Image (cartoon, rainbow, N blue to C red; front, side, top):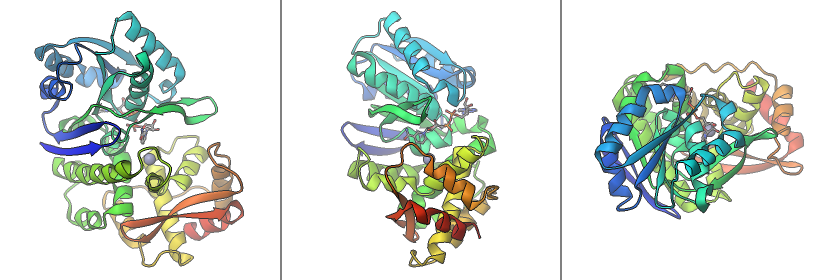
Length: 356
Ligand SMILES: NC(=O)c1ccc[n+]([C@@H]2O[C@H](COP(=O)([O-])OP(=O)(O)OC[C@H]3O[C@@H](n4cnc5c(N)ncnc54)[C@H](O)[C@@H]3O)[C@@H](O)[C@H]2O)c1
Ligand SMILES: [Zn+2]
């Protein structure tokens, strides 16, 4: 079992290994000593069918009483409406401040259940049990929780750190290759901002779905996320580097009406951004080549079906954007990115340089 300790507003461990789900009760009681008595498992219907039983049995064995809240899979469930139902369920189940929530699932479950944990009784403990690679390498660590509003994604939320993160690599066996790719994109992004060696590793790594590859990618990505979160928990500075590939990635998601998934869009966004930074001589070396060959090694589809004009319009429509400037994350050297603020009028030219 690998352990990474995160020291933010809460200190907690991220445990990675095989067969952890069956040990969850023991591991959770070590992280919440003498505290929680009742735990609410939160899962979408798919993950519930696959993994709730093993988790609940392990919790029961460790002396916990469990209740379970399930919801339909998909981004539409990441809403205030679902949070409202979950909060009512917690109250009906009489969870107290010494009880807790276990988020069993992907990023949607973690964001949703974490947000409910942040606001129920003004905050109760929660444990993240990520079952997608994206959740393991990105969303389960760092304490960003929240839901979508009709006006846009992730517009309501809270910073609320988990008390423990348990990543059982065996749960990756049921994940589709496309979902594995979504997580791999975020791991490659982490490498691009802080770990040049990850690219050498990927070149000689076995297949993406090999447990050893998953273990290595997740450990490196979590370690980088640890450094960034510890330096800037509330996302006012260096944490913004985690958005490498995301401004254009979000535009691609929007242009595709979200039929291109987040990780796939971020992969294309990183390529566009690296190619443009190279062409405009903002990068001090060719970061495009290693990023591109790592993405190709895992067979990412990298075709961008949209024009610079379409992507610019979608990027500038982002409700989170402020004023007449936009901040991009650009690679300086491999493993070292920087923030670059440009006037919005230059964005189309930048994207054009990245598409050619
Ligand atoms: N909080 C953060 O810092 C942060 C960071 C990145 C992304 N996110 C959020 O994460 C969400 C996306 O996360 P996601 O891609 O994990 O989505 P998700 O939670 O919807 O999971 C994707 C799909 O995989 C299924 N699934 C999950 N685990 C499985 C398994 N082991 N086997 C088979 N199927 C499984 C789910 O049922 C779902 O249909 C977005 O809402 C995004 O905004 C949050
Ligand atoms: Zn992302």
